[in-house]
Amino acid sequence: MSERMVFTVSDESEGMRIDSYLASLCPDLSRSYIKKLIDSGLVLLNDSTIKASLKVSEGDKAVIDVPDLKIPDIIPENIKIDVRYEDDDILIVYKPQNMVVHPAPGNYTGTLVNGLLSLLDGKLSGINGILRPGIVHRIDKDTSGLLVVCKNDVAHRLVAEQLKDHSITRRYLAVCCGKTDGEGTINKPIARNKTDRKKMATDPTGKEAITHYNTLERFKGYSLIECRLETGRTHQIRVHMASIGHPILGDEVYGGVRKEFATKGQTLHAWILGLNRPSDGKYIEFKEEPPEYFQKILTKLRGE
Image 1: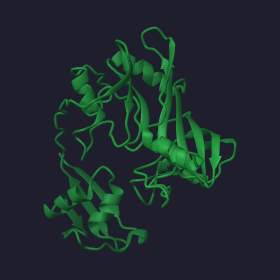
Image 2: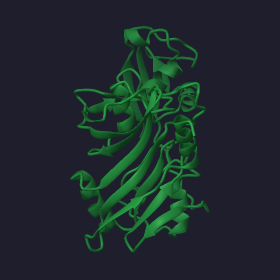
Image 3: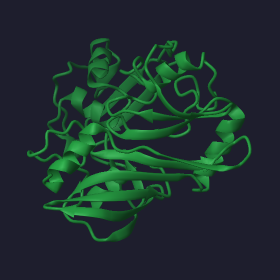
Image 4: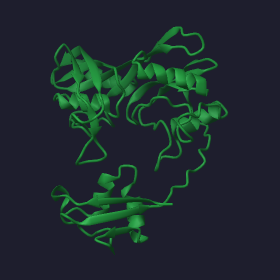
């Protein structure tokens, strides 16, 4: 069984190549994969097969038939995992910048999950499915910091409940553009961007999203802030800070790229993580100082 998706081209998308147009609407499908579907006759425009280079017009009807994907076996890999805490139920691990948390199309190897499967001999919770064993929450590829990983389903449910009722402590450090106010709360719902499906955006019709921030240091044109999450929406801190005119430094998606800093992704770090231990309910908390690249940026900003 394949999945059929039907789109009607809006005036905003007129003139786009059909492969680019469909890639913008289907964030889980790469442009190269869509081109393969086009070449295989599985994409129709106005009921006709087409070439990937064809440009769409307003009112065109695009139909894409996506074959059922065969989920590959996730292979355990001998990847170094920095473990900060471990008991019979959970791990607290440090994820470096540029590491993907769990496998997804285009990233089936080299992920944190591949390394965890090797480290724990496959003993991870299964609630989130074959591609995300043990993963209760995640952080973006270019965000560094602490994550909790669950070894069994009971622990997974208990930790997930803490996430749901906002009792888990999650604090992030970030360098953002501009001089922020002393502190503030951003309460803006977040949904997928209506014109760019690979991005998120503040949207009154979206899901509740609340970020508290506190300014720790101000520099010439930048600020060091700490953010505390109440909710955990995709790209939440990045979207929220950009929405008030202070995008995260280095964020290529939401406007934080600055020429004077050769960053590789957003300067965002999950530095404090606290939760009630599943085994006995005792509160435990961990802190991880920012990595070297982050520290070098702070040194430069301080003029040291």
